[in-house]
Length: 345
Image (cartoon, rainbow, N blue to C red; front, side, top):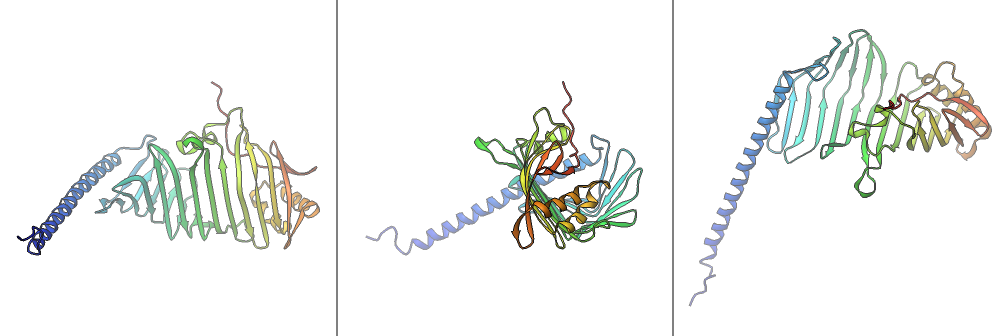
């Protein structure tokens, strides 16, 4: 007697399996397409409704024309051109703006803006900026912003028709720093710029900074102490890296600081410097005209710095209530950070 699994039955079973697979794929494609169209229709309706009303502060935003697409896996909203009128009468305008999110993961979005960006304040000179590319992204965890990034290639800033600054590359990153038990330890921030040039700078400048602010991640929740105020306890700031290079001048620093309610720094920094005289000339444009800090730093490093070879010397800089010193040698007062104290309840 012939087996039920003879070669005569195998082609029929294979055809049935192929048909079932095709049907399953067709159902999946149709279902996904319906989901994508429903989602994009809702997104477009929400955006069009939002654009007909001013923002809570009175700003009027124009997005013309608005298009929503990105099938099959993305939801992409694009404005052909963008503009805004501020409550005080100032105006902003730029090129195309694009926002993209994955249709199956709404936790992260990517944004791109085409230049030039033009700003005309109600009272002040015209400002414009150009770049070869400008991209930003943001990721959230639940309703809280988890991280944000922005990257600019070849930005150029112009004020009143005159170039005020440019850079080869500029990027900034912030994230909620992981801590114990799932609670954030703070806010990590990183900034880097290469080829930074401005009329006030003698040579192009490369800068980088990586810091951790001990605010329990409050900054990305919109309630950071740097913006809402610092109370009796100073805010800890761990400087993982602070570097600056301009020609022969180089600086690298790291240490632990705190900032009080008046914006004054306290703490200790290990600072390594190459060519302190050239560094003094580089720092001078960023400080008040009467500041003695650049010259004092150059002299103290030359006199008391530990020789690390290759022309580099390292010193320990102590900061107390905004005043910096190397040992007993005062360097001067550091500029205060733009923070404010908490208002007593």
